[in-house]
Image (cartoon, rainbow, N blue to C red; front, top):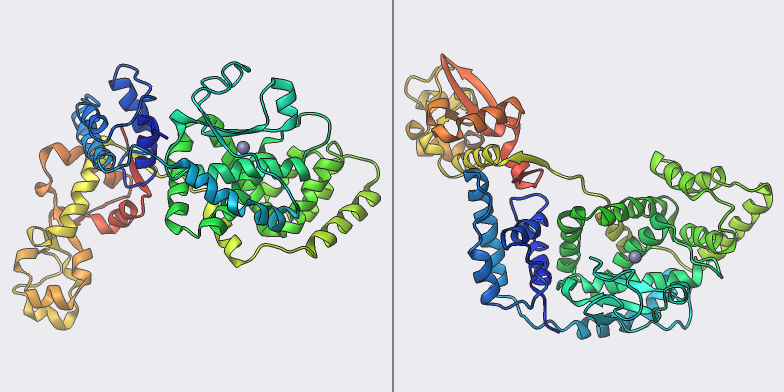
Length: 460
Ligand SMILES: [Zn+2]
């Protein structure tokens, strides 16, 4: 199939490394700057990057500078991307493993999965309810099929397809098919978002890894979640559900999760599902939470039934160490601190200076070990040592001198001064006095570490 511009851009964003947080907002900026172009047209390896590189971007000069850096990363990736994407090969690969996975995680034998289909619009000619919806894909189960007059199946909207994502989406949607057999009450449409989406997401990720063993793909999917999905309010609520499902699985494992699904199917109104979710997030053991969330008046019978369920499911297998690793990787990542463009630029400058330009700045005199201080002319604890005066031998023998690089306030370029000062009031950088002079110490507030781990990003 032909990729859309939107899909290609999303895929490039999911490779990470952008200054903007969330990087998914680049789509919004690009679309606005192109006069509302929804980017649903075909991606082309030369015209799309060209079209993007003509974008002016934000009018604030600091923001603009950072936008241009991000745009360069984006167009660089797009200019080597294939315009034709073989999604059918992805479907083949995934469907080859689904039967075994359904058995392993849900205890389901002999299940048929619909082959996912690519549609231009959702259900044109059937129902307008999902038309033009921004979903990557979704599953229409038999109850929805009856209600909406849409054939049962898994549907991908072509303009939303982004390489790196259909693998998980296929697994996620196939989990909904498995849930129909194990967790859905019979006879009516029932949707419990935290449970349906939460388990589809976290079991889907475990299944994905079992089918592909692709660490890079797993990393990319995490970036989809933290950079792209957070720009969509509906998808944000999925993360809430996934967290509840993960905590259930980590604390009580798969046999208990299957018990929970069996209760949902057998007696959906005997539990207050919101109470259960809240108790899990409060930290309770799932076995305690399910009892506290019970609403019926036959508690003893209920307890016996779920004990039997769990015992039976326990005899059918559980998660292993690899599943637990995938689960823990999917645990919510806190959003980073986002600095304004002028502060972020100042942060980049400070980190660059201490990484690449130590000799141009100063070193905290206290860091020099006593036995080496004699090698430095006029050493005193009240005078910062100019990096250029520090003998090469000391730079080599005292690696900590590098992280004690301090920058004299007069060395900060005029246009970065207010940003650097703001960083020091935020304790990302320490401002200190040695003798009568003021210096900034980037490592003092851990700034290079915070930028390196992505704890600090930029908003523009
Ligand atoms: Zn879903």
